[in-house]
Image: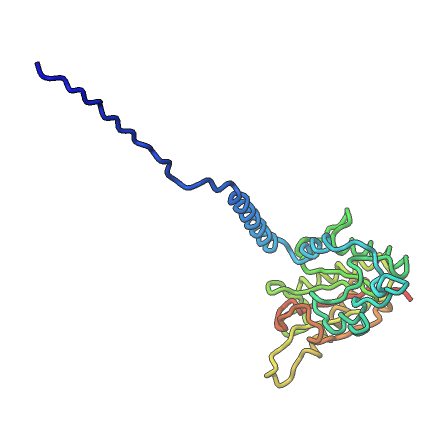
Length: 278
């Protein structure tokens, strides 16, 4: 029998250390959620811009505009802080006015109040509201097609209710470089003539065209805009408008652009103005 060893057994303890990174919290999740939300809002905005017409975009912009009723010429105060507003039609910016005559584009034009306001004659305001609703298809019995609505913009100025009929790249109001109206222009003129029965105000017609290359020997913009305005006058009279109501027919050439690109088709337009009563 072998000899028994008195040596104590050797016990080895292995200490396991925890590996990995420390906990960073959930702040990154909040930042990521904000990023995804902003990205979704951006794509929604891009989709809306592509899926809506210009008239619908103007309506959305008007919805978010301030709704405080302010006289379009007065600064809103009658004391030390009173004065002219920069949104008047004719004065200069140093006097607080003059945006329309200096920058008469669709974006920067001074339009007075948005939509029909309550300045001026109360009868004009009531009549303009009914006329505007009829032209924009807001009345319950309106039969205005979506195709026509895409070519109509209205606004109220100190002069009266401006009904702007404009062309697009795909839909022209007149045959190229002529004053022969297309079927679209005839339909728009018929709509304006039919709606004009709601009021008795005088009417002014203005023709606008896009710019032409400066290399042309004879620039046709003046004659073309004037002849187109005259063609619309004929269409309105054929539609039932009394000739005595038409007080002014003017060609503005390419001097008042609605689009920043002078050659854009959007600059080809007709403005029918229902003038305020004296």
